[in-house]
Image 1 (tube, rainbow, N blue to C red):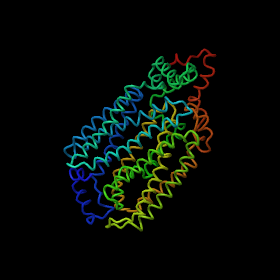
Image 2: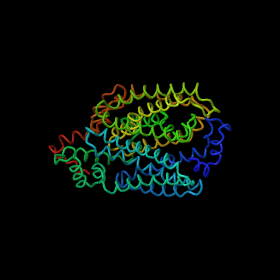
Image 3: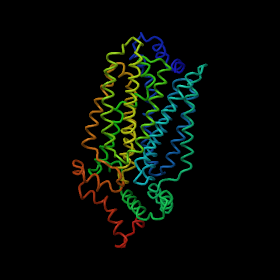
Image 4: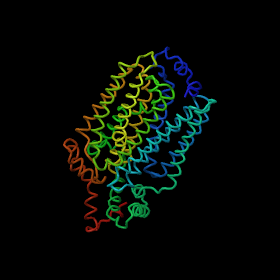
Length: 478
């Protein structure tokens, strides 16, 4: 919004009023503006280390409440900001909320979901993220039309609504059975498991969770345990997914959609309108993922999306190379529409694949003894590279120009090859059976599944089948 830029980033404001100063591709290149965006993710990265312990010691529910508190305070500071320092502090608090929420919510969803719908239910997390992006774009479009210079305050302040929804929602739900059992509250865990499964026949699953919790408690250093040979496949894939997710270029496009469209020659209103369109495509495509992920599988979605994203980005780069001049605001209407369509094609592919699956696959592949630590590493890597892209994108756009899309398309090619050879299918496989049915069967990762090391993990299945017959009660071992 011009009023926002004029108050906090006057240098950028002057360049947008006179594109001839730096040209279209460089008029938003400003470290302060990039820091405003990226500071949230750096704060989230730091908060994740603390969130790992709160999810394990205090539970998933209380961690979500902590996230809600940070969100609410951050929104208040942003909406009332009088200078750049106050604005950045508000963003940092919002980032803390992101760190705690991203740690707790995917774990919570994976642990309460029945196996047959685990993928779809977990993707609801990503769906709500995309809905939030769409509403943010709609709010920006509406508040940009408010005269008097206070529309940006309303835009930032309305973020308090989802913050309140998260807080109230966390107050209304119960903690997951896994979390309750992990903290020794067996009766509560059993009652919650019975309630969410809708049946009294939960004894086998309950004993399985108890045994998994017993094994997890024997792990004194979960982060160190992540580096053990048997846990390396999950760790490598989780880290790779987060790096690749950011190097698709999606967050650069979604963060700066109005800026990007304005750079390509769209007017202010057209830029915001186009951002709303891409936000809507993002939501609808994520819904597609919810219904397809447990039917066609994770690998198919990732590979198909790789082809779709690669082609659309290469074509966008070709159009921009020939049709967008650095010191001209003119982009032929036909080409402008084609660019929007291609960006929507790219966004749709990401939204039903790398977006939700980047969170789903790590949350369902780590065993219980390293799940909290694994999720923490996953979130940390994601936020680190989100920070890198957010801080660098406008400068990269200035220097690479249309080549920025070729840069990201090259990464899409690399991640598609990685998926083809190294990411196994986890569709409809219970979390507790991943070792036997996924990692031990994979052509490459099976070499990391040494029988001696895995025995400690798979003993839970033996105990579950034979424990009571041999006089062993896993519950008494907690």
